[in-house]
Image (cartoon, rainbow, N blue to C red; front, side, top):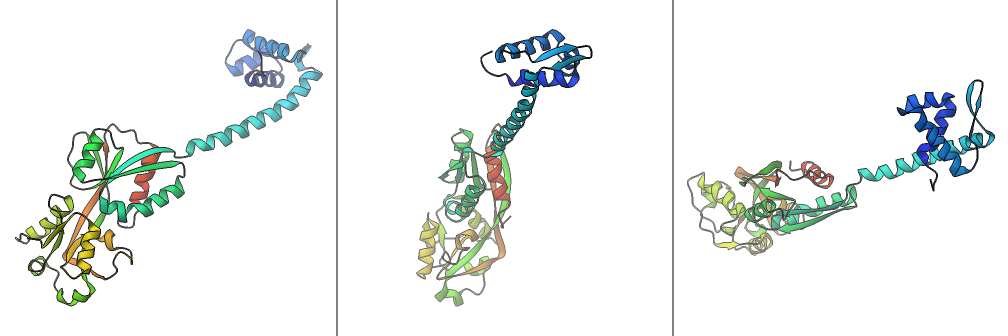
Length: 296
């Protein structure tokens, strides 16, 4: 033995407390010779006798008494060390890769990522933008840990967890606000619509809102960027229907009037992962923050 064995030190203290090798062996669940060997090796390491036999059993020598005093301090120091180190086991760390749409990336994720950094400073989150189909494919191929996408979602071996509902709202320039007093599909159908590009999940949702009234839309413009759409609307070139998160902040809706549609149009956002994905503390933390979002 080249260093002080803390286990042997604990055995020594137990022998003195119980008054015999056999009593200590019973507590430890080992043989009496094994206890005797530990005490002998401890004495060899310290190069002094630690125990002596009396008519009443085993007692500590003067050196043993000194070791007992220091042994209590050593045990307390070890306990404090273990408590300090174990606290780090509760830290959320590592890297999580997340895929989501451009609108959610711009308008939803920044405050959520800020909250994540505050709650879990050791966690790193990598964000990739794309449409729902591309994100789902990346998750299936294990290139992304999780996705925040618009339902419905189809894919093999996926776990889908709805986390929030979000309203889609009507927007127009403040100068044209008086032109739009009726926000039903049949009234808006005749007005120039600046829409999301065809093929996106967002566009499909808006198309479905009109189709529920038996109408098919022919947009005046089709753009792939929510910011480009808002710029065109501010210029008075038409109205649009956009996710509410895109005009939630005062700066985002500057120069625009914002109103709910009739009937109200909503979409549902969900976290998507592979079914065999290990639910790490980082992923669990992201899900908890998304579930606390006010839109839920």
